Image 1 (cartoon, rainbow over the protein chains, first blue to last red):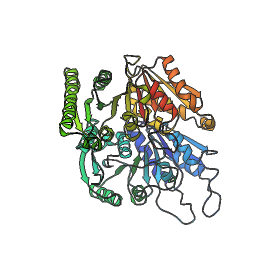
Image 2: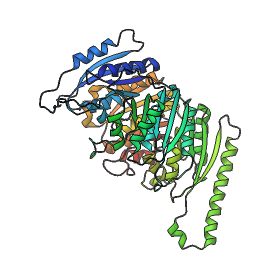
Image 3: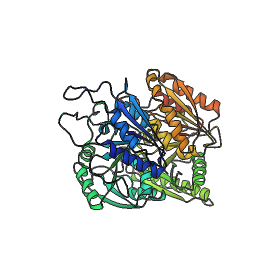
Image 4: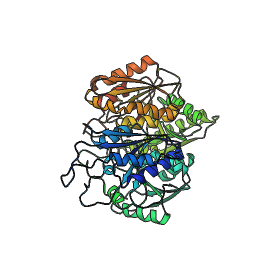
Length: 267
Length: 278
């Protein structure tokens, strides 16, 4: 299976080149068409009170610089958010695509808003989001994949949504986080069954497991990623509820702040 | 893409044939591994304290008999099949089958289950498949008893409101849609969402599906929540659908098991198999 349509959200001229490069690489590999958008939010206010930069021209230039020799088809759109927020536009359009590609920005610079697009889109959209790190020059590859799975609906959906990437990997390490002893475990062998199902889709799976407590999962994931020289992490992200709209779960936030490799978040 | 692993749930003999037919058809069509599953729920401990052991043993042996009978039926039905079929019985640690079905369901591409004959219990917060729909990470294909058509997936009616559940159902149904002769994409627009039309998400979706080999005919409907369910089934029936794809919506801020009126209506009244996701 392949991704056939990707929504690429460009927001920050500094990270946009890496986002475009990763999206272009995916598009070439999968034969996908890219919809590259910059959403201008009319209601956006910076921390320092100044009006937001209009980066449309710079972003469009980044997009166009990736068109030479491109082996994929694409289109550019500048969209005024209007009554819909930037997140709303990306979610609305993203739900009509196979996946979204956004920048994973975890550096906070003085004078710029700490509002980060990616954090608000994941958990709201129904499609997986590939977050491209804002540091490093490593081209996007996804050969050694780490799939963090705890048996939950969220983690399960993330895995299936990432299937086109898993199928093309050289190795996919499914790391099963066991439920704590206090939680009932209804069926034995679910991790093996899950691995078998992915294997039937041609995914080269390996299964490992641990009993990390909820508070350690983020750290454990990063440790596993380092051990395995991971170039793509796939994990679930719990949906936002109205109360928690701007708060991500501990693990997700930890990964956002500390992962230096691409992460595909689904659920 | 094809379904490679299917999980069909058989709680009792009633409705087994319908589910078995659909599961076998799909397993054959996709070359999938089919697991037939029977779950024996634990007898309620409160209830059992009042019963003498011999009665408990009677219940247990009856449960095992049922499991054995269903297993034999499954095996004889799939014996000569081209696909790999596996029968599995699980004794649940709980008094309901929900946990076990959810856990195992998460290890399959698609869950196939029947609907209770009692229409009123469908979609209720106590009904098993409705509960699993809310907790599962995989889509569920619900097979109503005495369904209207014998084919499945020739004419697929896809209801899409742009929200999360419907989107998951739609993409979860992709292998079915890819094999369809005709696919109708019914875009449901709630009146206050007019501004979304300018984005053209529905047209983007139609193009995305086309790139996956699925050509769709797009129809729009604007309706209020109370009428949507009725309209959808009406449209689907008139169009001759043999499969409906729809999100299973939770209602606002209430807990997962209370479905919106549209979902409840679809669950109760559909005469064709329905692929749903929450």
